[in-house]
Image (cartoon, rainbow, N blue to C red; front, side, top):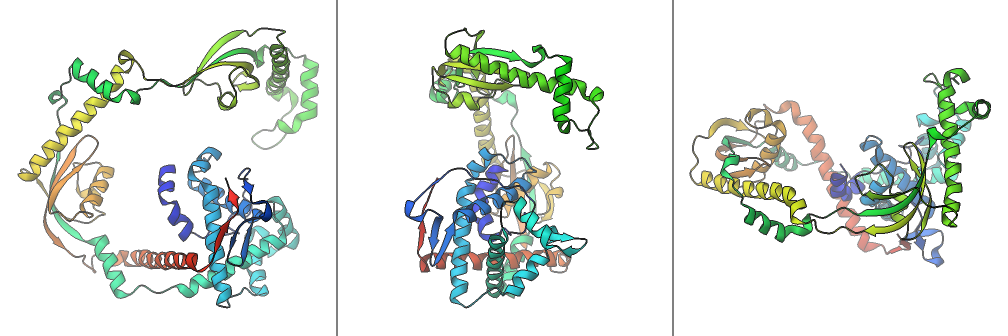
Length: 486
């Protein structure tokens, strides 16, 4: 998912105007610390006559984060957001919007006060008993870290951009539609077969394997490791008195709720309360151990080597530490530990014996693909025993019964992207040799049911193309000055 979004992020920002109101009620997400031109303290960029403020960037970043988080089922992390360069996407989106605002202003397009009011009053998040509530409105805005003036300015901006985009809409022409229809529903009369390699056909001797390892040894590296001197405090070993457990419950009973969201009585939640108190005291104890260890009053209980990807010990604090420094607390699944970082072992090429199995698998896969491709090329020159499949479109993966649905879909995408009448398509463990025996344009009657759906795609494609072209033109028309450095 991340790689797909990285590949398509340009188009997502250009074609999806993230609505200010779309994420009302979603949590605010900050984007961290960045430096600015000191002369532009409250501005991250200037586009034409419009300044883009820090608050706008924060808000847009939060909206984008929530949008992608929804796409990923709530699993988007801050690290993944960094890989997506969401802060850059947020700034670029604001720059694109500012370009459109400048252009709209030049053309006399504005948002009337009554239009702003009507838009706000239509938002369900601000309603009580089906009617707009000013009190509710202010409460919701406060909960998402904004105020009426800022929110109303954003609504005004959205209305202006919507008006501009609406004015730019051009219906797809008959030629546009026919071209897209033809591309989507061109039919090929296909004959094909699956080509495989018997593993027994592939042989590797020790000398060949060692030569392969020598040429690729940088591929087979040890993992980065951290040598630590540690003291652990296991929570369940911490002694707590019954009266302390009861006192902790009385002071924090709001924390101990059941599935019905009601506070669970002490006797029923006693074990949970005790475990919570033990964990708290374990942290206090490990902080004392940290100070004593740092001042040389005690020695570490054990030496530990933590290998990246092979331990349940969190590495976040360890990675930030310098050799010789002390780490106050590291939370463990069953308690806490304090540590001194003794040394860091950087990745290095594995010796042949340790890398042998990995190298053999890679060499087998490489030779298999080479033999498979050679066999497929030979079959294409003189195709035999091809299975007659009949006419297919891009959507007819089910007709190719000797491939999985995913393999067939990938193959058909290749088929309709190629201009060759015969050829081959490589899969991870096989190849498809094919021949196009005949070709015909789509049958409008046959695909009449899909016409409305495809028409929407045609219209959207044209809208996106117009918007992209306009943005490119406006980037030349208005000066863009960034004051933002990550």
